[in-house]
Length: 334
Image (tube, rainbow, N blue to C red; front, side, top):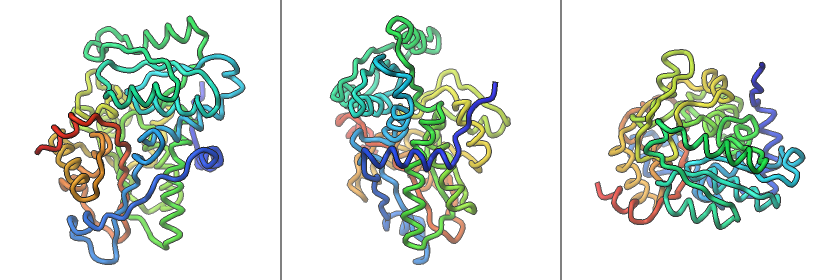
């Protein structure tokens, strides 16, 4: 069976959907990172900050596009999805916008802010024990039971062409803004988990700035994509581990993999301590309260995992801000 693969045309179509609902997340110039990296005046560093979406993360983009493209299939049926938290609130917001019922399966350890956001948009939430999921498969089992018993339409948080295309709208926004300023891009640095964020952005960045290096970032305890690049095929990590709860998928999606393999040059890893230090740096230098997953790309640059060689600008993704207050304060005490 041929797997449908999202294209740049799909991303452009998705932009018309996204623009009906939300304004672009800001692309913020980081003078502090330019100084930290010792860049010449001709080069700039930009942060694409998805913490400013109504759900506090990039996941809203893919969720809105998925919902818009499944309205006829959904009809009066509920939508179901499993999520570590950010897609949960994204698809719940989309359900609210399109007046569809949403049922979510989340790990019991998800930050309270993600539970609260998801419920605030009207979703029904069920939980599972993530510490034993590698043995029990409870996440997929519970989701499957809900889908079957309630005749739901299931949405994937990352492994779907419409989700990929929706996420890619953020990449189009980056390209359009930097071209408006007559800037070039040497490096695009983005988190990779299931691959929906990176795949969508890679389509847009590769189209707009074909000479740019596209580099993935993963926690060192969840480096399935780096291993996949080395092996030339998708590799599954059975027990991913990190404070970056949004970057703990077992493997990249099969719809994402062909795009990632084509466009992403490499993937680097960061330790949790380095991520915590990046969270502190973003808080001190930019006043940004990011969740660990959101700071991973910044950590890769601050720690020298990525060499800032080249002549163009550097773009980093700050993927989300949904973190509870006390854990955040604990993590940035480094």
